[in-house]
Image (tube, rainbow, N blue to C red; front, side, top):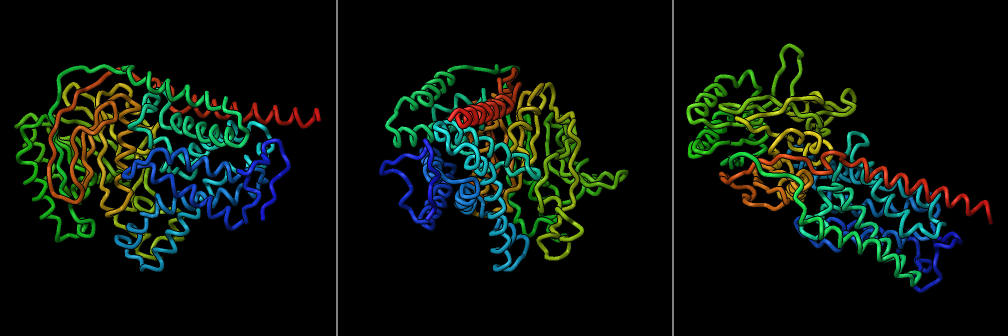
Length: 511
């Protein structure tokens, strides 16, 4: 049995965890993490985004640093085991690993992510768990700093942040101001306040999160960006090319014919969008086909945008890119790559050991940080290629001096799993954070047009060959989040943690 540290933060009420056996506490910790994906799409049970962290902080009462690290690791296993185990589909179905190996690799993936999740809670147990403000203040800021850590450590896996659960609640008003981390902070503050109040019968701590919720409702009436120019008609092609056939030479011609056929009725639209790597050839090999499409688009005064692998023959590099044809101009190279899907970490050791480490697209180089982006007529587009849309600061930075957001993807890698639906939810948040329309074109769904409030105006079903049409209004101006990105929230959390540490040390020296 874990014995809680004797501290002012460890209550003696019946709500204390002191009577729980270790295996019971670890089981509840796993449950605390497993609840969080249920707060996100497609379940959208958003109160669980408060209940999950609340259960964890209750279970961390009085634990030492090592104990808190282990306890929170179990919470991470629940979080990623439920919310991110869809990688199994990529490894088994398209990486052709046998079931046992795909299961082992997925388990290692989940365990590794759980370890990253648990690291900040070592600090919580080691330095803050004895402080009287550990539950209502230290835990919330450590939670948010943990999400921030996962957004960049080892190139980052910025997935399953609790703030995404609030797209359709009053807290959405904070998104253009603070970004998704600000929403996560309000939720974790709410969780800490609820637990602290229940343990100590001090309900005044509920006032702070309540005020933040009320302010979020008020912020929803604020318009940070303004419509400009003429409304643009958009057509999106969702070709639904089977992933297992996409790169097979004998399926090349049927692929090109499918895109040509589906696009024919869309030439009346101002813009036409094809998904990521729509053309299963490198740029220079595809030049004859691209030139035909360019002429067709130019004849109808249409901007055609397509994903394609760009082979820079001079530099001997291949990029995952977006190319503009017809009235669309520009060439964008993806900057944030997917490990194993687009490049192989420790390539000299892993390449060739199993087929999963030798996927046909795992040869990609990252593009330069500074790129001009895409333009169609007077409108500039901020591109985010597939995985890039899950990086809040990257999209916010790209959105400056542009009028519309564009993301194209191929989520066929993840089959009938939660992955594509979670991916779509994050694209909605980027539209809300930047106050701009988001066009989302995918190979197999969900393709959509999302308005600046993060609401879906039109969307497709998954796994169907179809097209989508709708209208987009260009927007100008900048939200506070575009200007400052995640820096204010991260700095606030860091300063609060430093202040709590200072106060805790002062109290110890005066005893």
